[in-house]
Structure formats: structure tokens, C-alpha cells
Length: 220
Image (cartoon, rainbow, N blue to C red; front, side):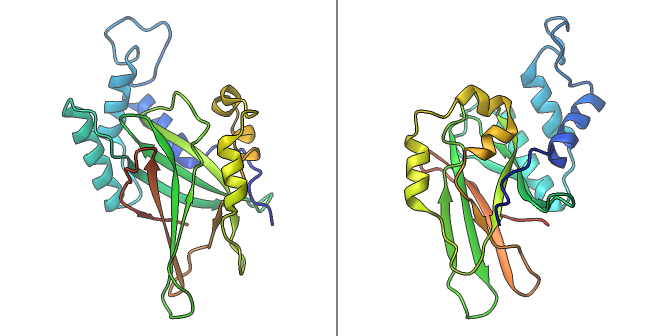
């Protein structure tokens, strides 16, 4: 099953935009200099100060990001604010929606970590360089990644991902502009659907210098 072919707008992005609009943080080309609307830094601070995630842990991570933003020092360690998996009722494709916070904007990818509650499988950890071809990322980056539900024996294809990272033919400007192009150029990202009393799955962020975020459990 290939579940990486959807370009629907993630709910996190809709929430982010709604929060910015509700607190006057929308960016406008005609806004006067010095206003929140003119200053994307103020817009980001407004978002971090007002957004409320789906649980207490998300709000704690958002407050941590706000404190790092306000301390005047560029912190190289990324923070994964939110991650969720959604299945389309029309196409049955599955996307992973993430809000990533990274002050030095050098994210490279995500780490998929899985554990079973029984003794039938060893813990699994796979590194996917899904941000390898993205440039000019936002400090708070909202993105959907097409994933494939992991079947028995499915593992990351190391050769295909190495080829993807080395590729010179991927149009980076199109990746920024077109969500479908971004996902269609990417090799499979395998994730097991989290199950109560079964498999638990987490996501981490990592950058090119080896910095990693704390892991965040996938919300269905």
C-alpha cells in the first residue's frame, strides 16, 4: 500500500493560521513597518504565546519553545511541538503532520521509534532525512509527510534514501511551494499504526549536526 500521495492541508497548519489571525499576527505585504503584521518574528512569538495544543505535554513543549525564542540566544536543538497521523476517508492514504521548531533552521529529518508491549519484537529506530532538500525553512515549520503503514518485514530502504539525499534533480523551489511534489519525490517512510496495548510509536527531529529533539508519541 502506497500511502504517500496526498496533499491535504494538515489540521495543525489550519490551527496555526487561525491562531495568528485571531491575535492579529497575520503577515501582510501592506502592513506598516513596526507592526506585528509586518514582522514575522512577532508573528511567531504571538503563535507560541497563544497556541494551545491537544494535551498538556504539547503546551509544555510550546512554552519551552517560547522561552528559547525570547532568551535572545540561537538554540541548535530542535523541538517537535506536535505530531499526528491522519488517514484520509476518501483515498485511505495516511499522512504524518508535524509542527517543528528549530531556531537555526537546519533540520535534516525525523527518527521513527517503535516499541511493542510484548516480547515479540525488538525496539525499532529508523532515521529518515525528509528535510534534506528543503531550504529556507521557517523557525516553526508545519509540514505533512506521506507515510506507508508498516507491514511485516518492512524496513527503511537505506539505498533509496541515500540516493534521495544525493539527488541533484529534485527541484527545491517546488518542494517549498508544492506539498504533492514534496511527498511524491520521497522514498517510503514506514510507521506502524499505534495500537493500545500493542505497538507504541514516537517521532524525533534531528539536524545535520546530530542534535535531536525529545521524542513525541504519535497521536492518532
